[in-house]
Image 1: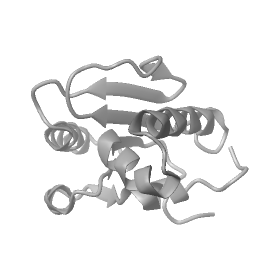
Image 2: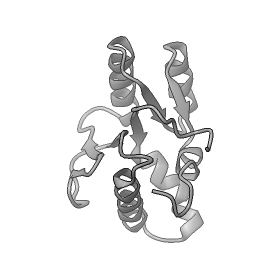
Image 3: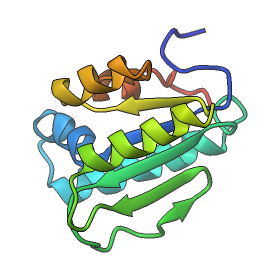
Image 4: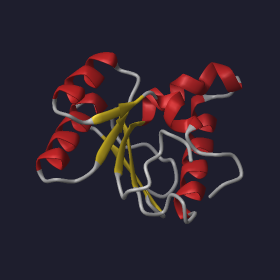
Length: 138
């Protein structure tokens, strides 16, 4: 059992731009290609019995842009419009914590991580979240 992905139903609030950009140079591909691959990967994982109890909210900065279906199995994709992903993640995580929902924020933004930790919300760096899925396991 890996130590980063919980076995209890949880909502993961994922900073989409942070996650995609943390892998851009590693794969030497365009941001659009890395985004599409990550969303396909997350959709596939969310269908597996080990991860299907979770909800994955991938939040992108800015206005809507085409990237396929906005709802894919347990994955929901949204855009922040006027706000930043950090603001939206903070607000959703704060609300979830106040209402007793299990939530984990996935971001590389250290200031946001610190603010969320003060509220008692668990946080993961993007690469740690990605690597928490065991290869070949769904």
